[in-house]
Length: 380
Image 1 (cartoon, rainbow, N blue to C red):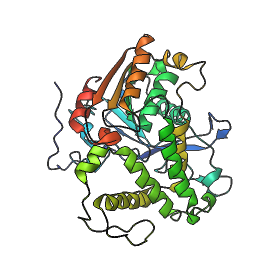
Image 2 (image 1 turned 60 degrees about the vertical axis):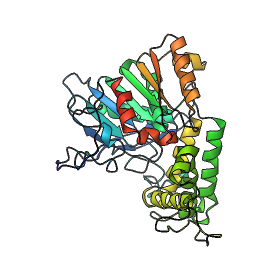
Image 3 (image 1 turned 90 degrees about the vertical axis):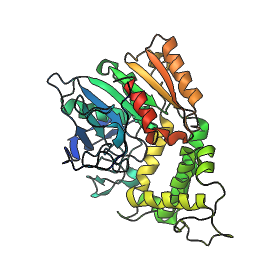
């Protein structure tokens, strides 16, 4: 029986945790070279058992962070990005599991990335930061897992770029994982997905305030980053969801300044105002150079890299692995997610495929709480 997730009035709970950091000396990178020292920011909920075998690793999406759950506001889906799925009695049950979420290598929420200070110069790395990959993120997470005393992961789960990480975990470290959930992700991004990401990066780099990545902390290409986010938000939605929510309605809410501050041509559509709002919101919380590096890591990901073939990589998967497609996702089409599940199954792997039936597009795994609850319950 699937536990229902109820969004009701919040109750007062003392937070169980706060963001922590773990540092280590160096990491050899997939694209060559060495990066170090490295810090990862992370949060945990629940208690690790004596054998170190009840841990769940949650891997976040492109502009996400380690704050997947907020015990102080457990009923508020806006307080933390997977809040309704985590906590006592929920699918990711903190009474049963020790749950970990870390900000990825390359991020800007406490982990080492392009916005971090380069110890050699005393200035932010900027574009002197090395190219990183999903494999590098996972290898860094492995060091964190070891540091925390985890001997085996009961589950690795994530969506989008987090799904890429989960898949990478199942291939690189099969001996450490019991179960894997790859949500709205495949073994490699499509040409169309790479194209969208490149347009977004060009918007950032075309902004004069980018200054080849050497902008001052707190400054930078706000216009370019805002436009990049606007484009990304279109890829995270579906035509049906945008039509239902906005249609051709003209402005219905308080007007948000456009990133270019140019006048509207003959009025403003509500969907335009929504995109301006999303762009402005990201600018307030994210670093532009980190966006360049993380989106490129998404493009570069190929689960077969370093192996003789895709089949050779997929044969390494020994965990029970759940692939989750989304019916309206055109960034990672459901058919491609299902094809990857079929490929693992044909190679003898214990792969399951299911779909979120949702008009919400790629973002459904951050919105469809009841369906997501049912999905996770299949594994835990």
